Image (cartoon, rainbow, N blue to C red; front, side):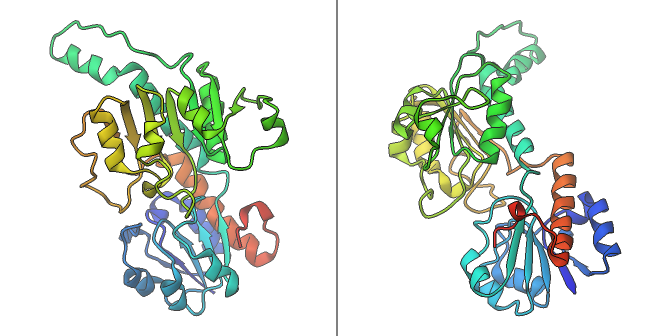
Length: 323
């Protein structure tokens, strides 16, 4: 069976994963140094994967046209947890299995969210800049303790953020579309997080983190109306997908003083160097690096490889299987 790897940097960060795939006897064609991503064209993906039986996919798109032009494809192992770049219904209808590296990426993304919170809470960058200019200029900052964190979406990433934020004594509230009976009764979870309706969450939160998958229901969820309902002086964090939030509305809210700032790690098209938020004071921008830690890539690569082997052997755990 032929395995094609389009997940970028796989061969650089997945030495152990490459070894177990090779030892398993798969024919491997590695395109991971070609830097595929969400900005890659369908034709580029087709050229790489057209004769693959198995693919290890990153953020590049495996839509209907791509999949139609990969007639041998029977398994996509997603190196990550999002799947908005894959036509899941086509996979389901055409016998293509889809697995994902659930449980690998969540902590690194949560760590990034906490770094954004601490950036705005303490602004050590400003204090360091003053010191380097020879100025002893001490700033009173809001801090993180007692500041309410609102999590829109409370899956694996949301819970990982809550676990870390609880250690900073931040009150935590969350919103999901289908809360449990315990949540509706107002019972806190293991991290002290409380379920709130979306309007209430936006009203009370000093930080709002978007942790939802991209779908028809979440596309531009954080629009001007959503942002207008956020607490004045609060911070919006988007580590979900670019199209979950409206960049223009974010900029307008920062410039008019409604939002104190925003941290954005994801963009409509990537790589992105012309975001509407470029040059906006108060906007912290990072190039989709929330999951970019050495540990996360090593673990994600290994899990993506193990999912392939276990799927072939029929021993894969169902939690890793989407289709």
